[in-house]
Length: 348
Image (cartoon, rainbow, N blue to C red; front, side):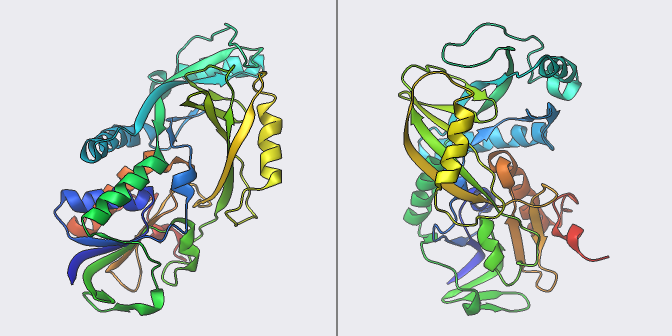
């Protein structure tokens, strides 16, 4: 069977690249074994402002301009809505936070997202003695639901094989790659932290960070916005909230831990003052990179082999942009953004 592309991995990166292929009428086959679940367990929020420092996310405004219509098109294709828009409220912990908010909200890149005033109104059940700042233009993509539905869509189209990819059985020719019964012009690896086992790209500095999230039931909280303090509290409806997230650079397992739960509970109890019940806990390995930029590019020895990875904590925002850049690079010779090109790690 001949196809234009083999795609390995179907998280947000793989999904975004598949959409580029579909738009260009390219044939493809996806391999996905659900071994990496960072996209599925992620909060899925999008926000172009780094609230820890009140600075803009790298290329955040441009990414959102592409990402939001992208997810709307996918929603229309699948007949389901995955994008929930809401405000984000930042809890201030000091007068200094208030001053820094005013300074940042006056900058042109941030002014369109940061309300220039501070709310001193009390929010029932929320601890916020220094008030709140409000962000506009934020929301959440239901990533787990999106990926489940997209995998079903590809399976019905006979474009998905739900099995592990065996690198030893890949044959690389000068102009084609061969895998079992497939013959393809190119292969793209979108494996998340699974890239560490990939013999063609495991030299890249992918530093996975484990993140854990709990889901709580809190009937007395009653907020319809994302609350951001030392943890985020994300409303899901029906009095359910996601609370996260931890960052662990040493544990590479997918198992939720008591240490992770304790860290989240300790921070949560400094954020809200109402009773709650923990009803779920999940964990995943974020594919992060030391310079906080994605890993996108072509293998130095095999021009028909590419990587799309390292989206980190903001995969919802970044995926459509980097997928389009890689597709245009492979098909039209467009230059890769040097900030994401894996060649930045080549030894000089």
